[in-house]
Amino acid sequence: MTVSNTRDCSEQVRYPARHINPPSVDPTEDPSTEAIEFISAYYKERKLSDVANRIAGVLDEIATTGTYWQTSAELAYGARAAWRQSARCIGRARWSGLQVRDRRAVTTINGIDSELAEHLRVADNGGRIRSVITVFAPDHPQTGPRARIWNDQLIRYCGWQLDDEVLGDPAQQGMTEAALQLGWKPPDVASRFDLLPWVIETATEDPTVIDVPRHLVREVALAHPDHSWFADLGLQWHALPVIASMRLRIGGVNYSCAPFNGHYLADEIGTRNMCDVGRYNQLRTVAAGLGLNTENEASLWREHAALLINQAVLHSFRDAGVRISEPHRESELFMRFCAHEEQAGRPVYGDWSWLNGSVGWAALHAVHHRYYDSRMPNPNFWPRARTPLSEPTLREQNAAALQGG
Image 1 (cartoon, rainbow, N blue to C red):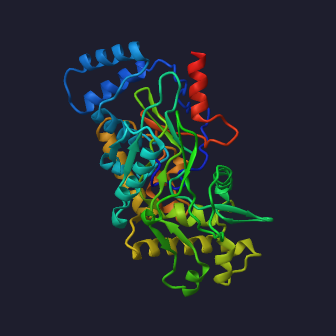
Image 2: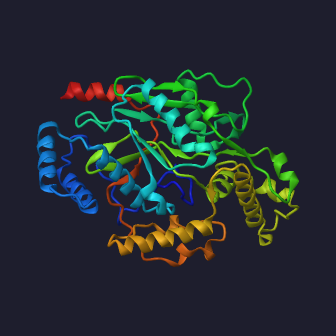
């Protein structure tokens, strides 16, 4: 689970062919081998008996239906193990505390909408952010996903194309346009921080636009303790990063609708969301506020500005009572996680390039720890491309699969 990552969790993930092969999404794939491995690991770690009987039952169910139903306890273990094994997440020391909401019986858009709102409420926790995952129905063994959320995160800001510039978040232009084409009524006056609506679809219902319940969205205005002018920039960010664009895979079973969250690492907001050219692109603006020479790269104006923005993020979130982590503390916790995993006899999975922040990275503990196992085993979280309007809907895919069968 990339919940306290040093990069925005919803970025397009690149998988080097040399060691990472995303698992099949073919719904007709036989999950038996992976199911046996998962059930065996679950029974071993939980020190449970009679694993042979459970495996036999699972294999019988697969032979009959093409898949199997995981118990709530197996689901919870699998979701936590997926976070523990996520090679690109530095916040895994908290994996065992993940709150798993089993909502596999909820299969309608109205029901999913209600559960997403409840996820926001439970995870926000008055600013004391909880790590939460809500797992909806598993993919069907013949037709594929039963439900899907188009948004990469449950809370995002619109990207408005205005002549030759973008107002808001450029990374969300496509999603903003998709919502408009589906009939969403935008605000009368566009701003840099307009909440994107959700787009939810199921195997029996067309994509539907639903406004995010604003009263459940906590936002933090950004200010700097030593530079009063920073507040005048009008920057803000939301408190809760709920990833909706990844597929949870447990024991050969895919869950294409399983939004999850941790809490923010300051780098994610300060460096990625605020500084990246393809996002809010605030480096030059802040550098000007500091009176730096932006025509001379030797002045390191970008680094100065990035540091100031990160300081503002940390100060503002903590002043607002919203949980957030800073890179050095998170790196130290990750080293403890590594030691614990090694003591438990488990490999430490990790992608070195993703485990080190861009602010003060050379001093981070994880920088000097280079022997991570770079594989990505299952259970795990896998990227799922956002559905463009040009692709068939789940309802159309479901109908075609049933007709073909």
